[in-house]
Image 1 (tube, helix red, strand yellow):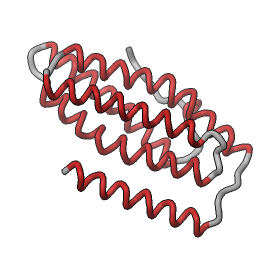
Image 2 (cartoon, rainbow, N blue to C red; image 1 turned 30 degrees about the vertical axis):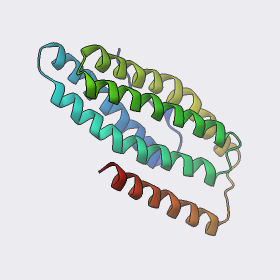
Image 3 (spheres, helix red, strand yellow; image 1 turned 135 degrees about the horizontal axis):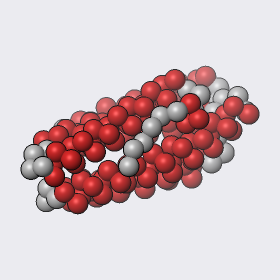
Image 4 (spheres, rainbow, N blue to C red; image 1 turned 60 degrees about the horizontal axis):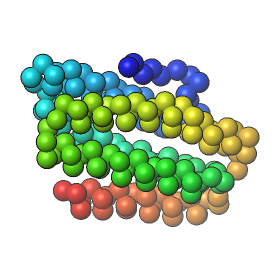
Length: 163
């Protein structure tokens, strides 16, 4: 399965688009790691990809949520719950991989991320992009600043608690 970036996937925010492109690179890196693992080498590459995704997922999802909140996206809470489900599933995969460096788990993670790319980024993220394009309003600046400060503090605390 090959995943590609095209302008139709753009959410019209440069930071989010770059984060999505970086996720695509990591999905492809995981695919290469899976192939290397099938050849008898590659657990290290899989672990490196998973470590990148740990940090990336936390940072990206919080940024995306702050972006939707800032623009008063009406389905913010539903979208955030989808993100929570993604994190729960991803963490379950990580635990399985930590217990058993199975080729099937690596494949399952790759397929899961691929489905996320197709279903979430290509479809669900497009919903907030369409809303924000049609309704370019946001919360007052002081609320946005406070929210972004909270997000940044959460990211720092999450990294400290994991480390």
